[in-house]
Each structure stands twice: as C-alpha cells, then as structure tokens.
Image (cartoon, rainbow, N blue to C red):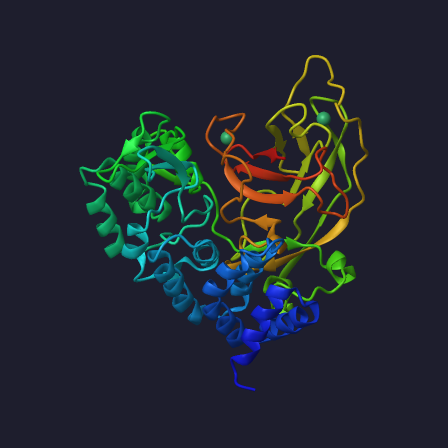
Length: 451
Ligand SMILES: [Zn+2]
Ligand SMILES: [Zn+2]
C-alpha cells in the first residue's frame, strides 16, 4: 500500500463514521509523529468538505487535536500551509490550525507574521463589520480568531516588532489598532507599556474604527491595566512594568486518579509522564488546625501542601495554602489569608455577623496526593495540565490580579486549581477554577475563583 493510502482511508472513515478505521487512525498518529504530520498536511481541504456533512461537528476539532502529536520541527510547515490556505479566503479548519499551533508553539510562525497581519486578523473581543453585497453591513467576527492566551505574535522577533511599529503609525485607525494588538500579544516587556497606552484609547464601543475599505471594527473598552493584565503584567506605582507571574512550567497531577482511568484511544502527549518529569510530591485536602474563616466561622480546607521542590524550579510563595471552600466566590470575591512564620494561617476577611454559607457547610475533604511534574511548554493550555504552578494564569473570564489587603499592591499569581482536584468538587459550582496569589512583602495569600 502506498504510504499515503492510509490517509485517504482515514478521511473516508471520517466521512462515513467508520469507527474501526478511526481507532486505526488514532493508533497510527498517536505513535508516529510523521503520520500525524502527513495527516494534518493533507487535511485542511478534506476537513472543509467533511464539515458540510450533518453531525460532523467533532471532526474539525479532531483534525486540530492531531497537531499535538506532530514534532516541533515540522510545525512551521503546517503553520505555513494554514496561513497560505487562509490567504485564499476564510477557512475554519485553517483558522483553527493557526490557533492550535499558536497555543502550542508560537515560534512556528517565524517568517509568516507579515502574511498573518494582512489577513484580517483581530482579537475575539473585536467585532468587525464589513460592507455586504447589498450596500448594507454585516457583523463579522474575524475569520482568524483565538483566545487571549493564544497568539502567533507571542515572542516575535525585533524585526517583526519594527514592522508592527511602522503599521502602528498608519493613518488608518483599524490598521493602527491591529498593529497595536499584535504588539501587545507579542508579550515583549520592551514594548508592552507604550503599546497598552496607545491601544487603550482606541478600544471603545462606538465609535467604530473604520479603514479605507469600509471595514469597521469595535472593541469592548479596555483600560491600560486590563490590557497589561491579559499578558500577565501590571504597573508599579512609579508606572514601570511589573510581571505578575513566574514563568514556570509545572503542573499538579493526580497520578493515582489517572492510573484508574480507562485508557483512551487518543492519549494526549501530556498524559505520558516520565519519571524524570516528576519533581515533587504534594497533597490537597484536609483540615487546617487553629484557623477559621473570618466570614462564616467555618473550618478552612488545605487546598495545597506543596512539599519540597527544587529551588531552581520553584521558590515562590508559602508551602501551604488554604481557603474556606464554602465562602470562595459565594460570600466574597477575594479571600485573603495572612501566613505566619510558624506556618499557621489567619483569615483576613471579616463579617460583623457570621455569614451562613449559601450552599451549606461542608467539612474539609480528605487529603489526597498530588504529584508535581515539569511540563512541556507546548502543553501549557492542555486539559491535563490545568492545575498549574506558576506560568501565565488561564482565566475563563476576564484576567484579574487582586490587590494585597495590607499594602494594596497587585499580587503575583501563584497557581490555579481546578474545582475537581482531589477526587471531589470542592467548589459550590459544578465547574470552575480557583486562582491563588501572593504578596511576598506582606506574606499574604489571596484567592479568587471563576466559575
Ligand atoms: Zn467561610
Ligand atoms: Zn502586600
């Protein structure tokens, strides 16, 4: 059989939902990165066709996920193909491919930024209105869209920065707007403050921005602070840039729970934990002796006992973090705790009359082990790595960094924990993530949750 016949076979199986062939496809791409590359390289057009079939919603997503098995050195070619396909006109699979590669390895777009810029590239917060064939306008969400934390411009070269800066001086407001947004998403500390200051006044719901082709855009209002927060930065009181996260690649994994899971036919590469990736042991759950919630008077739950970690990998924050699981996000948006030298904790929240928790009172859950693993930066946004230590927080709502109860400075992000860590949902909502922050000067931790 010719080496590419299996690809035709696999796409035919996707068209006709032949499950046994899909299992074969999975086995092939999961174990052979060249096969994954061949399958995706061939696929944009094929998937565009399949998309027209009823009930095939999952197929473009599956197509995009297979990028995860492609080796780093072959991603630039897929990035180029996706950009070239987008230049011919809107293509959802191509757009999704760009987004997926941008999430995993933005450096794969080296040499493609000018083309990307010319494609009508705008942020998902931006609504674009273009003239339609009948003389009216239609609202068009940009063809190439991605999330706050996915950008092919992230970490781009000085040459690309200069190109964007020249575009940012354009008399065309929309062009200027696009250039500034790309500069912001470069996350380069040397340009962030000036970019955010120039971009903030251009963000507003009317007036719309309009370019010479009659294409108009509007963006929800963002302050300089909002724009910087989206890239994990804030301003000091002197107006200097301050990074609000530690760029670590560490995750907290429930290895025990993983070993009991049914093996899937699409095991994500991030699920293959090698012994060398394990850098520490930690736990979640259990009661906190001698500390109660200042709002409801109930016990605190130990959300994390970090254990020993190599100092070169992690030296931030306290080794124990606790919260009131009945009050977080329910009674008050930010919960704060002072950490004493002896390791004890005290709630800094206060209610004159003890609050009765809206969803009842639950005892702290039993302690469960967590394993700290070093992660590949490509998987920082994959579901398996959702309990992250350091790195840029992955907010499901607007990015926010609470201010320290004591000194009023923005606090540094420490870690995020999914609500079902520890084998039970500790959060009152069925899904959500809690984010922990730290003020080193005051030894105060703070938590927010986003349902
Ligand atoms: Zn409470
Ligand atoms: Zn402080």
